[in-house]
Image (cartoon, rainbow, N blue to C red; front, side, top):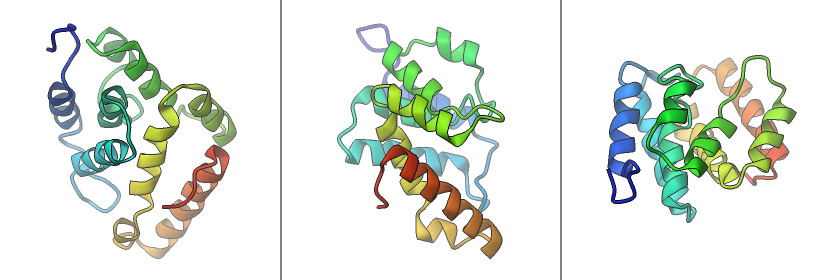
Length: 152
C-alpha cells in the first residue's frame, strides 16, 4: 500500500496476475502477457498510474477473475475503478453503447486503445486460424472506428 492508502502498481499487477493465473488467450499464451502488454501500452502512450492500474485490471471483471463488488471495495482510486468499469463489456451490450461509455469516462479511451493495439498485433493474430483472425480483425477495426482511434 502506498502512503495514500491505495494499492501500488506492483500490488495491482500481482493481484491481476494471480486473478488471471489459470487463463490463456485465444492463442494459448498466458493471459498475463496480454495484461502486461496493455499496461506497457498505456504507459508508452503517456497514461497516468491510475490508467496503468486500470490496464492491469481491464478484463478482470469481464472475465470473472474478480467481482464488481471486489473492485468497488478495492484500495484503488475512484478514477481507476471507473475506467475498469467503463472498459468492462457487458453481455448483450451493443458496440455503440460500449464505445459511448468508454468515451464518456475520462481516461478509459487510452486504456481501450492500448488493449486494441495489443489485440490487433499481427504477430498475435497470426497464431489464430484464418476465420478467427478475420472475425477479430473486423471486430477490432469497428471498435477503433467507434472510438476514433487510428490503427497502430
